[in-house]
Amino acid sequence: MTVPTAAAVNHTAAVTSATPLARTPISGALVVCIENDPAILDGMKTLLMAWNAEVIALTDPDAAMGAIEAAADR
Image 1: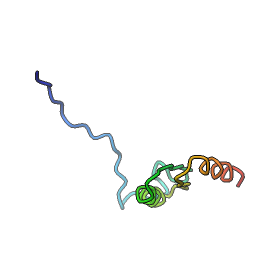
Image 2: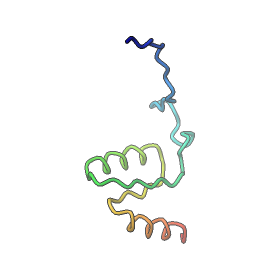
Image 3: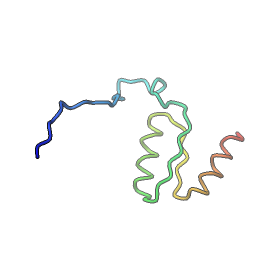
């Protein structure tokens, strides 16, 4: 059996150092990350904050719900 190949398609929109952070698609957005691996969670938080997003990053879904509610009260 053979499977035909297709040309590669790049669906990502690159954010480069030349892109003003205030113009990134997630600038100012509240992003909630729930991840059980602390290293991955920290990396994701760092990346999202570099794109000027407000980040809630926790390992526990219940704690994340509380943090979301607290953020909504601000």
